[in-house]
Length: 545
Image 1 (cartoon, rainbow, N blue to C red):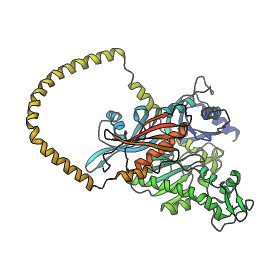
Image 2: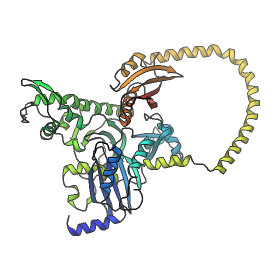
Image 3: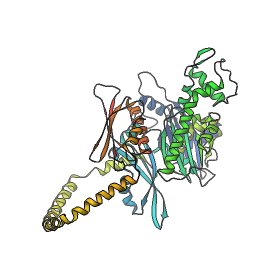
Image 4: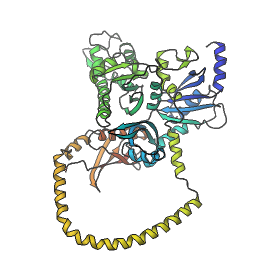
């Protein structure tokens, strides 16, 4: 960068700006955006690899990388917006009846309480009013809702609370947004506006996320289990040929992946003459087919369960989107137009210098950090959702005392009145009980026949779904209690891995028959370091006896 631009960069960086920070499992990326000459302008970018060492926790390594990446920025007048990948961050678009905006804060949690595979009692939730529309003569709201367990957000906040960077005290984070919202900021700033339903797949080395956008607005997102690293590792498996047992190293697999991607059967390979195109396809075939299956199931869920309609096209972005012929393979399996692209192409943002995004690789790496920096600080913010929850729980002692006295007086008056009315009505009800009993038995019989005719799923079908639980999950109890199906078992993974495995398992239950399945209990088995007991609860009204 030229000296005069370096001086301008320093000057602009000390003024009002937004710094977007994107944290994934391998690096921390930062991008600073200011309003310059009437345009949003990117003035600085930085990246720091998360150096995982033996004896150092992931959180400590991530905090160290975060401190290093932000050390080159002036934070005094900057607002920091953070985005991150997590399997338990969920984003959904819902519709609500028309109501005063101040009532939405109470109505939205009730509307989505069964939409997420965790309890909202200990979760952070925030929402944004998208628009107002008319349906069958009635006006309604489209509302975007984001939710995550409180512990997830507390962990992200703690990463910013280690050490000092260019200013006294801890780093103050203005906003925390899901990856799907950061992508929405990029799509919304595109110079090319199209009326379409677009599925974006962020394919990183160790994480894959799918989000669906209609007319540039996010409607649905979920994390996929298949990652680019899984595809690479599949090529390191042993196989037998005419020359005997053969195994590729991880470096050799990466070289093939970079040079050939998904090879054609007749394409020559020359990696120590170890492997043929047919053998590569044999090794990676199950993984890329598994990725296509996961994408297809997500698109089906969006179309059928969320009534989202048909997706027009699929865009693959991220570090691993450069895998050659991946777009061709997915297009043939999904029956949709699939392209591998760069979200920064055609975006309406200026760059102080072209060197800030010099290569396609840096564009893919910095895209989500830039998306975070382009966001509306008054929009979705999982930090404000957490603060609101805490504030609601705080009641001054004097106000609480007055409230209790008032409630006691009102209850006493209501009790005296209702007790008198109950005694009068009780005699009337008893006199008519015998007359209504035969009719009630008749209605129960009609209802039983109606349920059988609906063709609802049987217990055999549900047990078939449960038999496909992940290998790390062992089921040991299935029972009915108070109209609820209780599924109990053990997950043989530690920490975040156990939560991620359970989240995918619950999502698969919801995609089939148990549409309100939710996690009720997760606790560590005593004296067992790698075992967690869990309990999943689902309503059984939709189950045929």
